[in-house]
Image 1 (cartoon, helix red, strand yellow):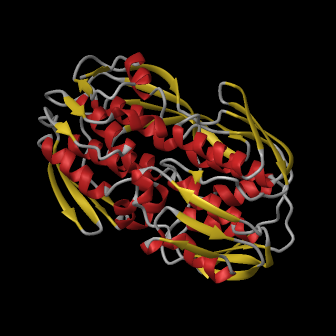
Image 2 (cartoon, one colour):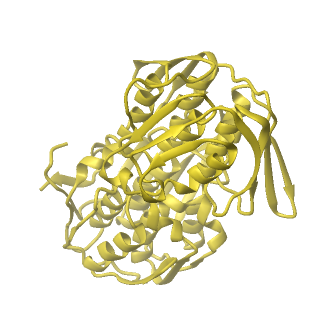
Length: 440
């Protein structure tokens, strides 16, 4: 895709069946765990977006042999640990990648310098570095642990760590560091977050103990764990499936099916919320894939959606989906209240501010709050007709392009290139369904 902007134009119905890209969370973890393991790990359905490819290159830097064998098919040869990189480890735009890799690297007696693109260098890493430092790792870098920074690992001690915020990335970093910590580790989760790391550690042969004590999850990784290479089948990413599905709900006459979508209950908050709004969203052919439930989701045009209050405790199950939920809310009648989502302000961008600004530019009534926002829909298509500034955020870009497919006038976004970080082929998929997306 060129440096030109991308424009979406309202047009005919969207129809067809597509497959979502591989889940980004599991794709990152398959690379990292494969590199930490002894032996061969094979992966099918890997998301080959820029973020995951940056993690793949980082694993090569830490000594693993990582090779692509076909579209979505990869092979990782691990040696049971990391070696010291000979150069700076550039994680591109991959926030998940760098936080998990730092956790994994902290368990070894090595020094590694991490950097990333402009967006990643502006994002705080302190939330991960704090528990790693308590375990004995040291680091040198800028204020609040912003990249670039140098991490020195090895000789870690065990830790019982209560998460100060709902963050699967922090939990995962502690667990990965705990693989090589004396005494093992425990993570205490007051709010449940996505559990892919726990599931995948078990798939690679580790013992992970999870106990619910009065609604608080205690996740314990005993000491002395060793990982063995395995096969990973990556399910479809629910965060990516959200875009064609919401488009199917708001474009008149549409019916869109996305196959093979992960249905992990800690990732399906958006689908639950859309159904509460009155969306015609159905799930069929539920089955198991590498320890995760997957299914085929069909969205049909739903002109009578109503605004709802989204429970704040649902946020961890859909934190990446609030921008596209806000688009659906713009077409619904009444207020959709989204609170308890302050985490959105420290993603690839300040997603609360950018979502609100983009929707307001398209004629939507939005009230921004410190920890959330309220969208007041009229039950009619918004005006559209705006140029939306994305500040390099792929989800802001895709969300507003979906809005443009059903608004009264086209919507243009300024930086389409970054969409490839999470959803390579997004524009082509939407065109294949009948959407009018053109460079502009």
